[in-house]
Structure formats: structure tokens, C-alpha cells
Image (cartoon, rainbow, N blue to C red; front, side, top):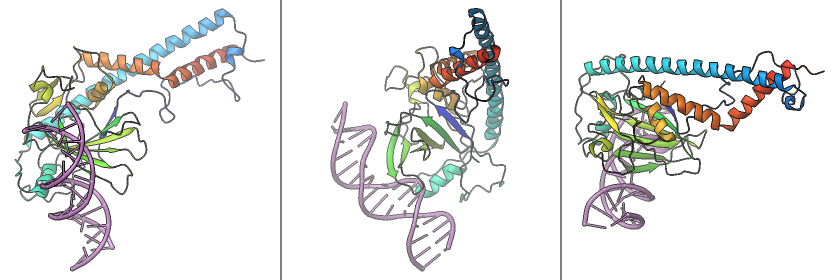
Length: 314
DNA sequence: CGACTTTGACCCGCGC
DNA sequence: GCGCGGGTCAAAGTCG
């Protein structure tokens, strides 16, 4: 029930088996048997290039459509986000008492309307509240308390580190029953009073996927913004949203890496509708697609299918 | 020497 | 009430 954000450090837009190829190969496929023999066939150069050009055009159109879809998604996302922010601002925020450990945690779950720094479309892992003070209107509590982010990393990378621009201190690690890989617990260590916690665990299904669960809301500026000149590995600049700190990718400086894309996608309140972002996303998609061998293969298959169709086998 | 990580012990909620 | 399991603490170790 929680909405989670999918963050893929490589912006995996590749046509995987469960994600059909956007440029769906022509429905009119060569019948039945194999499909990749086409290049062996004799096609006149004209036909061949014609088919290729046609396919290229089609792919371009498809790309356009995808771009538009992406933009539309970003817009609706933004709309939702602002709605959420509005709603959040109407709910009184309570300061938690640091004294009660357990209580404070659960209360941080409950009353701190966190549109968390990632701003991930909130989701509510929030357990039922044992919160005393919150005589809550049961349902319509905004459930943006816990954010979950999926990050694809190198499978060999066992560090369970999710770079999000904040500074974290690990305070625990446990093995859980349902997942062989341990779960690591982090606290935001940049500000002593910052209540934000983070849990990181590898996905049970895909070891290359790390699930980071954020709880709480930062009550300070992101380190990278407070110390713009200090390196500390956080290159992305960040901006503080009035309703909560948010990460904003820095497009100006360096070419963002995959993980930057991750942050773009996962960060909740960045201006997703800004032309820069859109442009960047499109570029990343294109790069990602062209780099992906699967995509290339699929494209080749599509093209060959097309060619095959145009010059029927005898 | 300070900041961070590791890790076993402990706390507490929840289901039975 | 009891046991289990998730979450946290805090001492010891590590690192720069």
C-alpha cells in the first residue's frame, strides 16, 4: 500500500521482459518461426535503407511520445506533491520528546507529517498509532510519513550505502526473518536533533536492489547546502522546501551520474516540471536506452522484423 | 582524538 | 503471560 519510489542508478529503461518494449515491434510480424534471419536475406540496399529510415522515424516518434508521457507524469506528480504539501501544512506538527525512545519513534512515525526530504510520494508504512496526543481523525491522516526508495546498485556492493546527500550514522544492523540480507539502521547525524531515520536492506528478490526506508523529516538544511564548498562527497546541491528539506539535483555543475538520476527521480519536491529536468531526463533515457544491449538487440530485432516483412521469404 | 561502525544485549509491541 | 522479532542502545573497535 505504500507508494514507493523506484530509483535506478542506471535509470533502467531497458525493455525488460516485464516491461514491454516501447517501440513495439510491428504487429504484423513475420509469421511464426524465427525472426532474426532477415539480415541473411537479400534485400536491395534501397529497401534496406528505406526500412531503416522508416523504423528510425517510428522510433523517433515513439521517443517523442515517451517524452511527452514523461512530462505529463512529472506534471501530475508535481500536482499531487503540491496537494500533499498543502494538506501537510494544515496539520499541526508536534515536536517529539527525545526522551522516550520507543515512543518517540512511533510518534515520529505518526505525527510528524513528513513529506520526507526525498519527498517521495508519501506512503504510509505508518503503523497504527500509539500516539497519545494525536486524537487522530483516523483515515485522512496524510500518510506521508515513511518513504521508501528503491535503489539499484552493483550487486557486489555490499555496503548498503545509499547516497542521498545527507549524513547518516549507522546505529544498528539486524538480520530479519523474511530476508537473508541484514537490515541496517541509520540516523541522520548532521544535526543532533534531526529525527530522521533510515533503514536500508537489500531486496529479497534482487540483490542488486537496495530498499531504503526513510522515516521522519529533516529539520535542517542538507549538508551540501549548508556547506557549499565542502566536498564530503555530496556534490548535488540541495534546496530547502518550506515544508521540508528537499534534494534538488544540481544540473549546472557536473554531469550527473546514475545515482544523481536516482535522486532526481526519487526526490520528491524538486521541480520536476522544469525544462532542465525534463531535458535531462530525456537525455538520460536516451543514453540509457542506447547503452543497453537489450535495447539494441530489440531494436535490431524490430528493424529486421520490419525488413523481413517487407521482403517476404519465399 | 573524534567520528563512525560493529555487534551483543536489551526494550517493547504484538500475536498466540 | 510468554515468546518472538523488530528496533535501539551503548561499549568496544576502527579509521583518518
